[in-house]
Amino acid sequence: MSLQSETESFITVDGVWKSFDTHPVLRGISLDVAAHSATVLIGASGSGKSTLLRCINALETVDAGRIVVNSELDVTAFNADLDAIRRRIGIVFQSYNLFPHMKVLENITLGPTRVLKRSKKESVEEAMQLLTRFGLEAKAQDYPDRLSGGQSQRVAIVRALAMEPEIMLFDEITSALDPMLVGEVLDAVRELREGGLTIVMATHEMSFAKEIADQVCFLRDGVVWESGTAEQVFDAPQRAETQNFLQRVN
Amino acid sequence: MSNPVPGADTVYIDPLRQERSRKKARRDALIGIGSLLGFVVVIVLLVGRSSGWEAVQETFFDGDQFVESFPGLLQAFWLNVRIFLIAEPLILIIGLLVALARTVKSPIFLPVRVLSTLYVDIFRGVPTILIIFLLGFGMPALQLPGVPSDAIFWGTAALVLSYGAYVAEVFRAGIGSVHPSQTMAARSLGLSSFQTNRFVVLPQAVRNVTPPLLNDFISLQKDTALVAVLGPIEVLRRAQIDTSANFNYTPYVGAALIFIALTIPMTRFADWIQVRSARKRQAGGVS
Image (cartoon, one colour):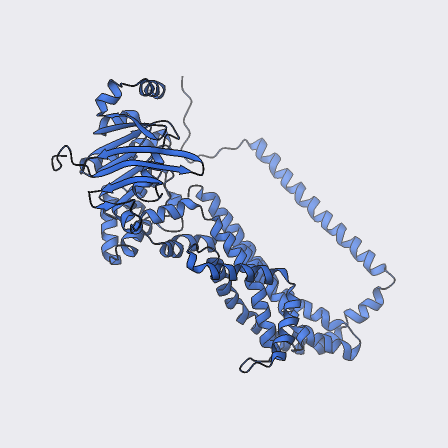
């Protein structure tokens, strides 16, 4: 955060609309994310958290509005190179989405070898370093079906990290996990946060959100209903709907 | 209060229960064997006592005829094998290309999409034997320069086109069976649409449709006999000639046995693949 002035925004979401068929999900949402900060999106299911994350790395195209990264990469431009955008912005999904026909190591090296055109040897070395960092080196030669949910999700994180993204998006990554396995995945996110990666995370883990968030955004009806620091939003929410939501999840 | 804790890999089954399930297994086996034997006896009695059995035995199961015709049948069958070996890889290639062509979204490829859809509609809709007739008699009649008039060539081409349409649909179903979240995960890493197909979707699609593909190939092995309608002397045509020469149908039985000898191992192999992939999917659970 010290590298970035208060006013400068690393990810700028400006008036973004997105609907599926006739169902509006994002309704003119605006949001600024500072570099090297963690922004946590909270809100009920259907409030637009996942859709916003998918718009940020161009897995969905917006209907209106702009998303700009690092004041130079316009994600929403008509002629945007979507593959290049996705290369720079990593995402981890709720359901892991590992490739079941590839070993853990192959899952991780696929992007670096095919997209970044790195040599096999270099990719494998980097992948092994990342796996070791997250305590998964023993699983490198296993297929995903041999992993627990927590291990799968950590491999998914490593797979996204192997692309050396500037931003990591986490889409409810602990929601499909056995409660006993949530901790190990959150530990991994905590470690990335300490490493200074810019993080945007949708989650229902309120105590974790409180712990790591520089900024908390409560989404409702496709807009940011209330945002602020973790203390502001969790301890002194200003709007009735925010208070109501926090009461129900706590 | 707490319960005693057994060792981690202790398996304990009540001896009385075990004895009972063992008895039941033994009884089930006996009933099965008895039922099968009874069934065979009934069939043998019914067939053997039918008034036409002797005549049938003479015309269909004549040992001398069998020995006399069998080497010739085997030799003719080599043509079926060759047709099969040439047709099979071509069918796989056409099937895969057509299936992929039907999935491309770019507007510039609209003609490709329309053509491949038309191809599948037409060649899947017309009976294979009719395609063989149409190509086998029609194409040589055109007398186009450079186009072969060989019956084996057009018979094989007809099989390739007919089966290609079926296999394209099998591949398309396989591509559809790969969950969209796999594509999303691949694209999120920056892989292009082509790379996503090549490294993530197709390998899983092919795996998912291996059993139905093998089934189609068993079917193709038999349908090589359809080329007989154009005249080439493959095993069915050979049997037909022998049959009409001696007024004895034993060569047909011989030809049937040759087909069975080839298809049964293939069927068992397909079963094995199917069981194995089912077990894998069960063990997998998470994908």
